[in-house]
Length: 422
Image (cartoon, rainbow, N blue to C red; front, side, top):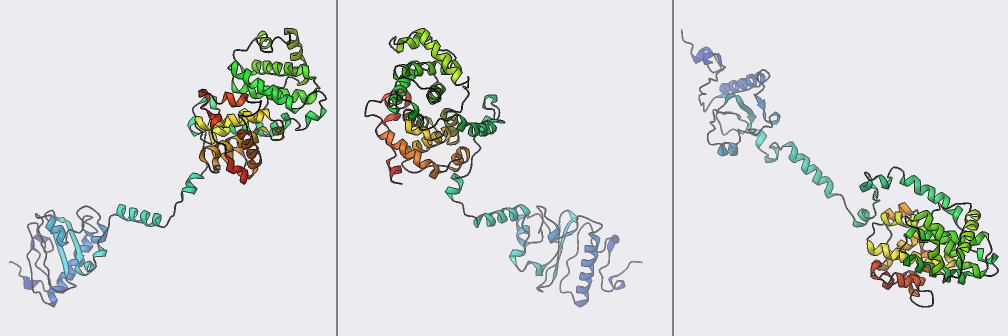
């Protein structure tokens, strides 16, 4: 006996036991009464409940695949092969059922009322994330000064270089800072000398700069030579006839400590125009090493300026100008009151101001030198005055050296005179 629709009041007749949804299609029903609306509601609930057993049957907000919102008219227009198997009415709250060719597995149950507002349409998660990031960055203000003043890791690129000793470099320079005061001399030691004065010392060092350049020695050798001379003169009184011998012997000792190829004793005798004999040089060498107790490993300005130039991210122009300024200071007796680290930092600071024509001292340089601009200003002003008069007078050895192409004509650069007005 065939069952009729009347045997199922308020429901569609379920052919083949599929709750009114056959695999081949669904009848379109229009102008239903109140009972039929309740029937649709019941079917809606039944299908939604069935989604627990059929994971593919989901609500709008729970389905984020590429085929989501298939019940939207625009989606149907974009997919001309899709077939709608549901009915639409003019009622705003009418329930809408949309199917794709895939059948029951791709069906989505939605309510037309939920689409009244276009903003209610589901947005992919990655779009929401990008919008959130943009909203967050819109309120952030970046200033160039903050970027420029950030402290840079100057040893980052040397991590694989064993000669850079990145693991120990900070400890090494911390030790240099602790011990540099022990190897500094009194800025008034010339008061204990009865036959020589600071002017004679300046003449000796200006001459040694030329000897150092003629022998093509390493930079370390010159700085160690000056340190040995001052430390020896602080402890021993010397007559003026022996002062040049002290300078020659100090350079010989520095060469033995720093150089790979050491000049011969006879070479130093020749450059002194044979004013001293070989025996004189060797006797003075014995006297100096015993007076200084063979202490040659000292933190000179050179070890600091190399590190500080790295912190300043220098180029050759800044490097040559910094060495020019600090070698001018080696000649000047009054600069002995500054420790080697301060001299090195002030030379770089003054060179940067000379090149840029404004005050330039980065946070990275301040971090590694441990000196602020205010601490460097006094020493820097003196360097500017030496720079101004470097090419005049009788002591022009440093100026002639750095006027050559080899050193980028650094001596011809304009002094940072505006620092004198600060």
